[in-house]
Length: 492
Image: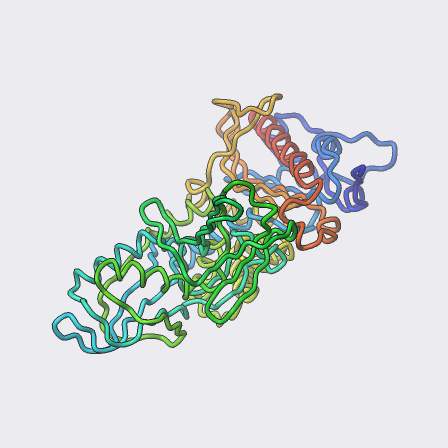
């Protein structure tokens, strides 16, 4: 299908006037103006035209020290930011919680302890830690034994009420995608379960486990059944105490593995902890999930890494679960009574307006996974300029490579970029900081999206829809071309 330009590209966009590098260094570029038919494109407009992107393009760039706008396109139009939203979430969490904030996961005794026997309930209390994994749980189980506990005569409970329960970050995604799991006040392994299969004669040996580098405990709360079909590849059916999956035999080949999302995080954590406790000689009863705030004697405490370290990992690996749990924790710390992601994101939007005076940020989650969110590029640039003054964000952003004509990273490129990327099918974004060859710093945001076409893709095909890869590649090529333009002009 031949790509088209949206009418808004011509009529609503702000474009770049031609100015010399010297003028750019001393004063802002003039706004791009709508082009009359027959008038040749100039500057950034030519780059946008050459990208041949169906849909919309918006961007803004400013001097990072002064906030002086240098070039903009698209006016006040907001587009889905995809994972670039995580840069805003990072700023939100740092401002509300602080860089040194640590999440706590505890084991608590609700009852007296005599000679190592807990005559009451053992409660695993989630504190919203997005990085809790099987290795940490194993250490907590060992420390429970070291604390002198040898037997629990009461119930084994898992408290997940520190955050609201969310079935899926983006329900519009196919059920089996591991980057859209459930959320609650406790998580494990980013709320993903490891599914592995190996051919055995005419059938398959199937395992579901909660593996990390050191441990591979099997789980009972997630099951997989191989069925004789070709499509759909996966189906999901919830039950009271299990995530029940089926997989198409025709898609399995000789063997393989993938991570599947967990929809019952508290049962998952409890299932794995029971196994790990048993290896330490402590037999626990059936997992009971509670949202009633616990009280009792604290036996074991695990503290997470400090928040700035967690956010660095989130920005590097673009972990959606981290963004949502951190964002909701910040919203609750502001006193918001949130029941879902949209309410938490609305609190972040209010914070952005209060903190930066912006009005073009309308997020519906903290990760950018959902395509209902909108962000105007100049509003993100405003936030980035403010963040540059505190120095809080740029050290957490990973380096962004510029490429040569063969698509290879250019070593020691004179333009240095630290940025957050964002990619959905037919949605692409990039935002962060540029250091020009002369040492001057720019803050920028680029969003592109074909929202209309994305809306036509059936839910079942949203993992790899036709045409998405080539569209996103052209968008990334445009992003690099704009960065090189700005870095070259500002540094000349």
